[in-house]
Length: 233
Image (cartoon, rainbow, N blue to C red):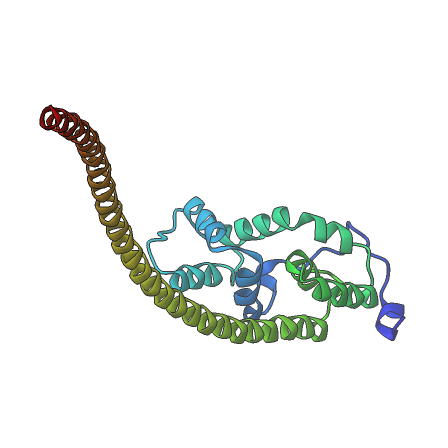
């Protein structure tokens, strides 16, 4: 336990309140909104506030960050949405001292499930400015790492898409070749059937000729025998 923890008194829920969104330095508003809320949720909140969302993602993000800076109806609605969405993390960290908060932060960073904890810690009554800068710094660097990773992933994706396009062309060529082979096979099959029919017809004709030849041989034999008998007389 550090000196800060020893100096801190247990939280009195009636006297010690969590820090409000608009009470935080404006530098934190951008990362809170960007980390803890999706673009769909941001638009949902702004629509509820009758704020026009017919802009690109960056402009919509800028609008809600600007609204978070001052104590007003809009910032209170944003605060309520964050508290409701991330209530489990707020309840979990409510009775923690500063050392426990730091330990909790290290744990959630390892798992990647730091969304709710980030908001709970930044608004926690035991979190001082040094701790907030520390938590903010981790998220800030994660965004850089994520950006670098996304660029690498995007490059890989483009390479994969190019390979996929090349393979698609190869497959298209193969499909065309296969189609031609199918047509050729059908033509050859037709030719074979024609030849088989021709051979079958020839076979029938040969059999008929063999029968006629046999009949002719018999007739010649009979005539020859008759002729011999006539001459002998």
